[in-house]
Length: 459
Ligand SMILES: *Cc1c(COP(=O)(O)O)cnc(C)c1O
Image: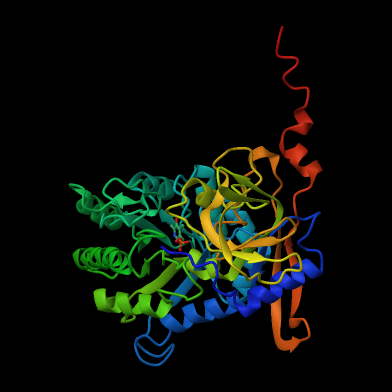
């Protein structure tokens, strides 16, 4: 993937950077922050809803499937972001007690929450059932656990996750449908289909199948193939049971994101077209559909801004020492080839820099040599006091910080831009989403309350 950092930033991002610097949200005392483009989020959710509406004729008309679009909370686990998504009509997919808690705090109705934790404890299952949130069991032992804990009058929809074993994409760690993936019931293993059918036969409340085929790096055809296998299994189960017990198919998320430039590809519409081709019956209204997109809803609607603290030369390479490193771009730092990011260069006033480009490393503030978010990148020459912007980091970046070196969680702001352009460009309004972590909080989370705890262990 070639990352042309000389491309002009989108007008909204440029306006937000300029205003963040002008208003001090980015500066010496707050040298790194994440930003969420709320207009972009609304537009993206609308595009998702449009792509799935009117599939079998008129929107919402006869024959069109009911669809619940949930947002995979792990992609942007920030209460105000989740609340915005709830307000836009989304449900929420959660995969831990913490994610369930923040989804509830964000205001999602339990009926619009789906719990997919890979290793659900009995306590977690009990709580989900008490709330009435939907659950997808990861395996048949978990189905047994749910059976033992489920009150007869439970309103929770229960599904079973399968692994269609259609293979992996270009990033191993993101591929959930390989032969030996840890997720779901491995569908092609000997005897698996029979065991699955038996489980559905034994439990009439088991009414959904779930498959999340993969995330970034998985081609659309692979995802569509995995969903086609899942659909076929649902048809087989319903046929063999002689009743339409399976009423819902949860087709997961995983639409890949283009990190190379500003264009959105593939689009949700292209995804729906690929699914229609691979699984026409999916859309004829016989199954309710549940989706669980994360990255594709948020990645392009966020960026990280960071101050350039120093620049230096080493071994003939120019290095910019910035405040955005592994603490906020963890995957990119550890797997630079799988997760390259576009970097923008901005001056001390927050205006896009131009001028001749120079090969530079963009390094972060962590104390290990690999803490570099972009290697040998051609960018206008950066100087101390300038800013770098890491584009497309609205999912799985600033919302998922790493506390290495006791670096603080960076602040996150949402922004909205009005269409008007004044002397300063577009008008931008900011709202705090998460405060930067304080030194007091860092110490508290480092066990301050137990400061003397280890001194008394010695007899
Ligand atoms: C992570 C995950 C998602 C979201 O994946 P994206 O690639 O962010 O769309 C959806 N469903 C499940 C079960 C997941 O684990």
